[in-house]
Length: 274
Image 1 (tube, rainbow, N blue to C red):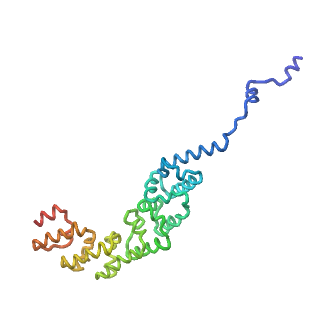
Image 2: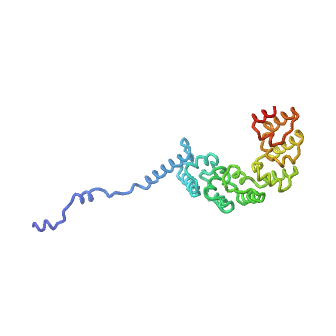
Image 3: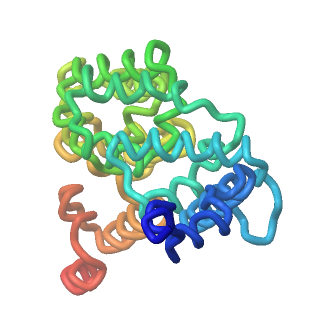
């Protein structure tokens, strides 16, 4: 009897707890989904990609789409701190309808044609996010070819000027180049001006360059040769710098080289030519 009693299996505390309590199970799938969706919303809000006061773009599909763009850009070297400025300058990047694969050719172009590193590409795009929406074949590649032909170098070095230059249609660049040739610059002289002062491509011919040239010739009675020696003349304001200083000198029957007339500070200029 004693032996039989010992031969029966006996119940332990652990076996009781195991047999009497339900088996531990993972939370229902909808709880996992809600938790993940909540964390995704918080993350996108922290990047300033979602307005905390708006329910727009908060559906799971919309959030997933925006996250896909974020992950794509992060794979191209962008960091969390870059996204707020991108969202302000180029909000369509973070539309639920946006497909990040549409901008992949731009990154390929920057790497292959421009020889830009990941960080250089990032720097250029941060300075001009509209680059991402430029057509490689119709805009970026023809523009790059033209800029290289006239000798502008180091275009892969990030700067506001170079980023916006690259994003300019080649027809606009050629229009500024032709204008210089119409003034009497040879092809090489015009190319030299553009290399020395690539910002000239950002000036309007009719609203900026032509009025300054006409003032130089008609009012200041100077010729294009002086312009060739000092093309930075075009960089100064006609109303605030060129005309006032010319009239100041004219009243005193003085004539000095363009660079001395324009480069000096107001204090130095007006002290020297009282």
